Length: 259
Image (cartoon, rainbow, N blue to C red):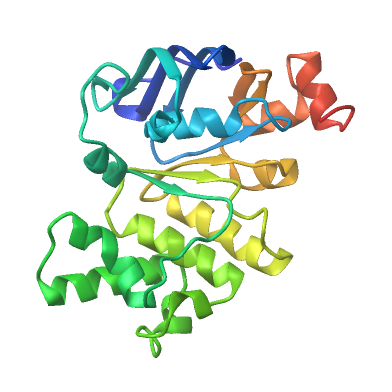
């Protein structure tokens, strides 16, 4: 396990004794993790182990599920998100989310990216145009779509739709980008583009990615957490997790003995 003590300035999240129940189902059990700024943190583990639930808890998206009960701390910007009454729209401006399958709005490419800034009160047309261009450039999509910004976003390929959704999340200038299996529905070429993009994004953002693809975690992440049955079994630098795991269950999962 990681033993180095991180300073507050190096952390984006400090998760302490986090527990979550869906009704009677105990889904997350005593999670303790420190997530560093400007790093890629991968969450791996078999289906149903709590990976997606954990990530959706970081921006309280899980609160939309009926009968959810949460205890513990998720410290973000000096506040415990679980107990502090936060404006969820504002919270999700700072903690963006990208899902498994690209889900553009049934609007133009331009309007998809401009949506968030407009919701948050940006009205200056020139500023919106500049922000749309920057966000599309950040995801390496600008050159592919700059001449058809008024075309429907749903006309893009699957990989382009996913990069558009990342651009849409970046347009609100978040601190954190949460990604829940963002390449699982994509072909290998599109997957490689998203992976390259994630590595570049950590220069400006903190990325937390759920992935079922262990090779992907090894390629792109700085640290990896292995979840099993709602618990964090091991959390360490990615190289250590994949080369010298401390827990036999981690080794068994990585080597394909289960999951």
